[in-house]
Length: 224
Image (cartoon, rainbow, N blue to C red; front, side, top):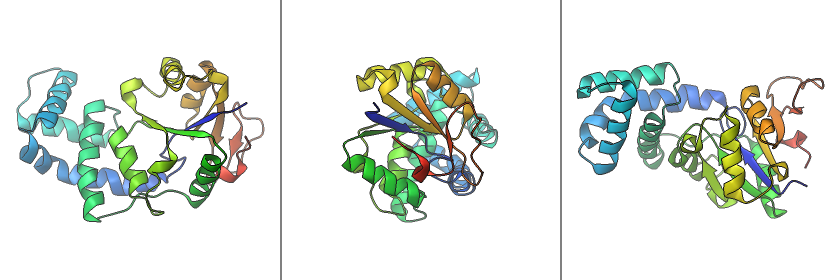
């Protein structure tokens, strides 16, 4: 029996284009100025230090900014970069520059599941802060009360079974009582390896009944 649902964001609850065409360019354009303005703040200092360590050398500000931009352009899942992006997006959401895109079918079903007593969680490569911002400033208002918790790459990579084992441990539930939703097969493979139930979102496609994971075209097709 499923007791908890863990959902991905990009391509699952929210459109790929919102992330790729709105959030990423917004952060990319503002990152150099953001780093220079805030580099002496304690939180930013730690993130920049982590980024330098991952880049493999002592970099000055210009070189580090260039490295961060390169990671954005190549869609690298670098944890300190994701945290910096989240802080930049925070300014954008609060300034009203954009709202978080969430599919209507996702909102409707998440609200229904919440009302039925299912525990809802988010697991995304974007930082926890970025996740809370997207749902907190969504097109449908503040959706954060629906969720009991959030996970990002601090708990591990999304294509690693051990990440899902850690999530199950934190939820205090047997893995088979947790359903993971994603649009990425490798993530679903890892979740299944850890014992999770899985569902593959294939928006704008016809579900393949012979696929390795149950496929649905939207949240309305998910049966608990």
